[in-house]
Image (tube, rainbow, N blue to C red; front, side):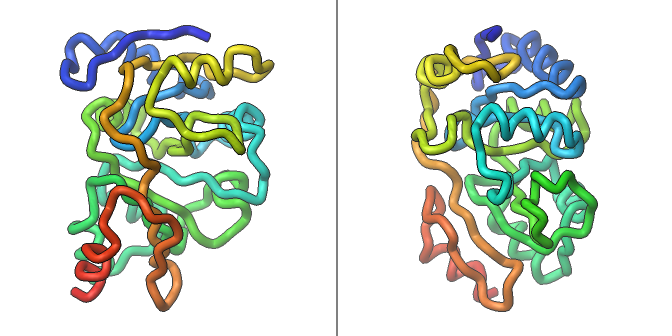
Length: 214
């Protein structure tokens, strides 16, 4: 398991690691990446083999879908049905630490959506991830970097320790040290007639309700 140091505040110093990560992901690899929430496992969400590898690595049940990170609204519209009102709401929520469940429109590997007609999307507020998404040009998986049942982590060393003895391990760890944030993203379901908060996270629920009333 290779480890490369990166600095969220210094893109130039992080370019080598980011380029290596992009190369691996484009070849079907799985990379541990820092995010604006917790450390995540990034793989090409359009590559069924890469997604299957991620599921084996996490020991994740195939009935659990995987959220995706995207680079912009245009990519979101390619993956999900977004009308003008919904686009306005998303404009208030993104970028940020919130995953939105929407009706999917694009064909994605079945493991990504667990065979459902919905997909969870997030537009992160994090320069390192934005660079990766720009270079790769495809949606990436955004699941936390931990084995299912274990706690997500903001510490790269703890992520490495968790996977060190596993047969299936990440191809690379981008180590940004301890992250500033400590919570997985808020999850909001907008695929149903009535919006529903699935998971409370960094985004204030009251603020969400105010935005949804637009």
